[in-house]
Amino acid sequence: MNAMELLASRRSVSKLKEPAPADDVLDRVIRAALRAPDHGALRPWKVLLFRGEARAKLGDLFVASLLRRSPSASSSEIDKEKNKAARAPLVIAVAATIKPSPKAPEIEQMLSAGAVMQGLLLGFQAEGFGSVWKTGAPTYDPEVVTALGLASTDKLVGWLYVGTAAEEPPAMHRPEPSAFVVDWK
Image (tube, rainbow, N blue to C red; front, side, top):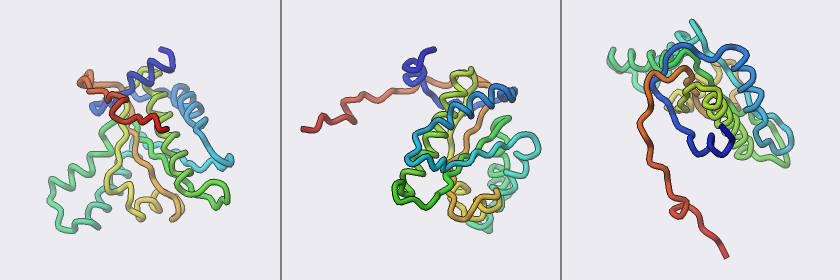
């Protein structure tokens, strides 16, 4: 599949199962994604991998975050939150590791980390795997950020759930460029 076909066919796959990408595929996709645009060569990103039991620990962080926001959460809400980390055999968090820079403000560094996430999503699709980029309240919880070993100034851009597609995702309406593109004069 060429790059244009990959971009045009990009899709989120939310029903995922084993297997996750093997280490050689994971390495290849990460190396490609780290070619993201990066003003000032700051490399303002960190990629965290959650496999096996690490996903259960991540689920515990999601539950702790939920209970901080909603101390009276029901047991079904707690179970649902914990199980989010088990949606796929591999969960990846991408963080923007904000660095002081006279050239690249925080927003550019955030966008660069977002480009890493998009690169991962496209890379896994190119390798025959499914993935879906999610955020949610734990993404913006400072205690989750620090529990992951990140600096308090770092910002999570989301969670990429990766695995083998359990079923074909439904067809998605693709936007018409004319609804979003203005030829400004």
